[in-house]
Length: 120
Image (cartoon, rainbow, N blue to C red; front, side):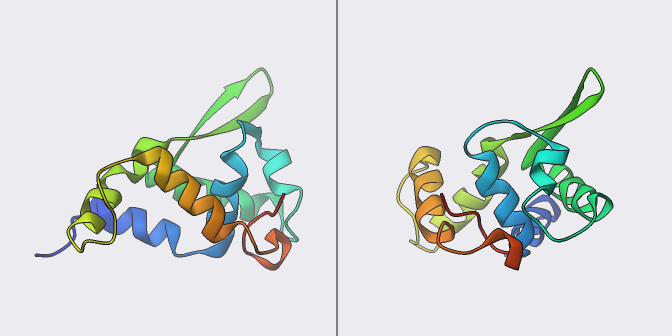
């Protein structure tokens, strides 16, 4: 059974360590694009491209509030990937809160500037 195009898009978005770092940062709260870009050693344009990939995968949403563009985590964007992984017995029932905690533990130990995940 082949993965569907939306599922391919989610896994492709998750394949990049910078995008995983951004998702980790957005676990805490919505963030302005400039705040998302701050810990990374790359241009605002490069961060914007990463944000576009995450938005196209349904993992984040973006909205303009006044003159500032904000990013928000969309945890339901991971639902299809979670269901797909269940088929391999890798995960129990669909519990996105537990999956979120798993991501925090597994991805929370690397440095975002190096292109991985923000550690608190």
